[in-house]
Image (cartoon, rainbow, N blue to C red; front, side):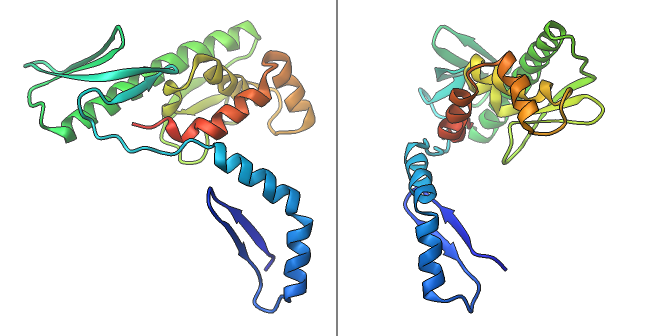
Length: 212
């Protein structure tokens, strides 16, 4: 078993084999000092996850913009964006479980529609063929590309700015050409999306805020 280092916002956790000496631990820390410093700086910039309460005037992100939740009582359930508001109509304005379920469903459907449209558009522009596009819940990734040219995205991407979404789409489309993350793969990505580093940083620092 090898030693591992885990970096959090306010901690450094080192796991080592039982018989490893203090000297070897010190050597490991010296060797990894610059990496640890870099990771701590990254952690400090990461925006935290804030759990939603589904109450009036709470902010929800859609395509990178913030919209305040407005809850209206009515007989027909509906959700729409109007001006700077995310307006939801429900029969019981106190039923937070129902409100949450409706908002989740709306975001999921909007995500599927937007990502399908943009994926097929960018694929056509670059003479690439996509079989299908779907969205689902992912805990630790933004998308995946299958061997049958089917692409699946994290539905939460709909909350990110359009340029960040475009990066993830291009990232997956290039896997239709290169099924790996080799230097050649990244060359293809950079040709289609030059601002790779900025997009990667945005997702690292803001990914947790894409939450409802």
